[in-house]
Length: 594
Image (tube, rainbow, N blue to C red; front, top):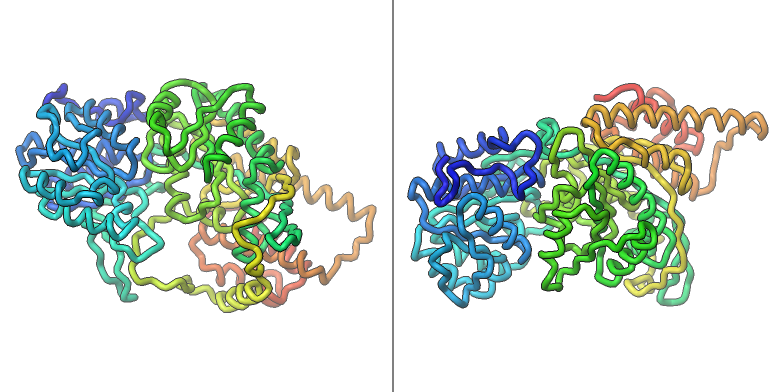
């Protein structure tokens, strides 16, 4: 393929370290999407591709071909962050397309050596008229990178529409085309479904599940950690709770913030475990790096200090308001140092292919941000590489981890209600209302004092399944999972996790038999409300994991358990009945896979 000013062949991956199998040709999905684009010749095109799949390569291939055919004269790339402007310019330069990342709308013009410019959504919103004038002067291709950011603010969406409505072509890219609000994404088509809701419609979709089967991305192993948390409210009351137990929304948020407190034991233990995992991964990936995603700058600096004490090496610290942030990320991408700590700076779009271990240490728990963050670790360079992400044992985050392969659309006007056909939805709603009635008071606000925390290994989440039986920090089970090889195919990861799971269950049963011989074997039919709530949470978590593996509705799974074991609904089941159901569904997980 001809490229203006280039070598005639467009390299398929950027930077120089090409992903496995793509050094001399486009990936299959890129070639297919390019063929579709050229055959349909659309003015607007939305390509949804999982992070790490190569959206930049696809877009620049389209741009090069349109320039060659003289269907466009100029290119404007719109990105969420300043760093991505530079990254796009570097990638385009390798394709023989000169992009100016320092362009500002108020200047109006750029050096004639440049074929295009790179700007941010915020920059467009400040002066959309200047960009509209530029767009009208030339036949322009506008590439809207991570286009869902066009809906981040009303002014952003309006600015993007005003600036680029006259464009000859608009190519929209995203890896996460869903939002939690009703702000329409500019230049995205919405279609009404049978339920009356408008959903975003992609012209081409390449999801994580497909990319994983094609060995384009790495399989992600999620390491979940729980633990006991203690904090003091504004009123001076001390609160204690276990991370991951059924709690009100306020209590869950406070427990999570306590866990992420840099002075507590939880973060130190999790960072230590993550570094052990990184050491294991580096046996097979010598340059593998780790990333801690922090919620604020003070915590980031404190986490970096802890990592330095653990590793003896000073990690790279990237703060979003630093002028040198882009250079720090680029340097880390090219060297072989162990850790980088960042505040949201690398949550999206930043390409550091050697990242293989992550620590999710931010209280932000939206599906969009989680997907963006995990996307930093899935970029494969060769077959068999695995990624490991350490997460707090919070139900919301674990559900995101179990739904890695779920493809989402942006839905307008949808209410937050149950649409799964779950016959136990009413039961869950009643429990939710009961929890709200017993919820934290207004005294439990953002101002609190973390008093202490400890970490305990909870479970591994992979491919929608749960593995592990819960254990103490530095337990044999935790070390067993931390020692998973870093070079495995997805099927090999799944088989190995199953074996580890079966081994853990067998050891647990053996220990229980030994305990029964020494203690009163009579089971306790009724337990305290805390014990029953914990068992119910564990059961519901396993049912959710089995749902994601099999596609069966939650209610059907609960009914199967009740049909095989008897007993009432989960809300009325005794501790013994709940334990039996938990054991049965774990047996299902180790014996077969849907």
